[in-house]
Amino acid sequence: MHLPLGLHWSLIGGGASSYRPRIDWFWEQAEMADLPRMQTLILKPTAHLLYLAAHLMLQHGGAQARLLWFYDLDLLIHRQADRLDWDELLRRAREFRWATALRAALQGVQERLGTPLPQGFLDALAETDDHQAAHLVERRADPLQNSVINDWNFLLSLDWPARLRLALATAFPSPAYVRWRYQPRPGWLWPLCYPYRWLDMLRKGLSTLAKLARRRITRSV
Image (tube, rainbow, N blue to C red; front, top):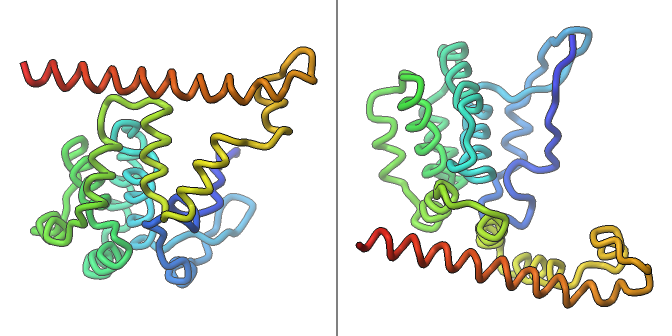
């Protein structure tokens, strides 16, 4: 039996993300599970549900959401119903500023699969909405998604020092990366790849702004 695994080095966005959680709490929520031919640590149902929802809405975004990911939430809620602590889920969602993401994910799974939720739980999450987080979830749910918008949304999810580091690294990557990324021929032309990169970033940015402007005009007509 083969199990496909997706490896992640952090829960949400890395250590510089403004929505990074308390990692120690997630370690406290780990438990041993028996898989075919192996044992491994997995998250307890409450922590697992919170993580899946936040990863879906903050890391990938509603615009990129696949039905399979909502089905994961549905299965977890159905199969672990007796172990889910909804009061703890609400507390931790508020603490980590994930209430908006959790609400969007649970609304999505309920609309798509009719998943049962505790009475009033979505309303309780709505009362704790964080405006900045709500804007991020809304932007990631926008159907107009491309590399420029994805990079911009990721940039806004970081703290200011990390934003500056990322902007500089994007504009001035290492020579080794430039040679690998652009494969200049002959190789000694690699410094010219920097202005080419900047012009390409400018082109993509202007193209994205034009698409956003056209959509705004269309909506206003």
